[in-house]
Image: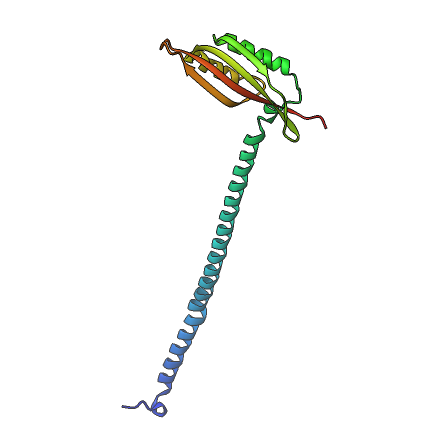
Length: 182
């Protein structure tokens, strides 16, 4: 059965027109603003996600830079102790002998070796000899760590007493550093 639009009454046309008007009004006033707002919100969400990802990348970069700076600070914080401006070897040798005595080491000898230039600084090796118990030697090493001037151990030889008395003989070479005069 085909619909014949010519035979529709005026009331039917008004009802159809009203339905079309209400449908158009719903689409224009209800659905269209919702659709536009949804698209705007999706765009805002995408923009905020992008900002958050960029912020996360920047935070990671800042963490990396902070870690690098901390590493650099740790590397140079002891530089004044390692390479002091003062070349007062006598003071260091005196402190070294005092710490050997304070730790109970016996038969000690301390001797400075020739200076080795290393560019902007020089290395001064110092031979140390002593005997005592292992605990006394360990105490000496701990005392050495707390001296104002830092040193590094470049050679270490520890020999146990053949009589199994618990005594050890220690020969080590310490190195201290000083700035070269330019």
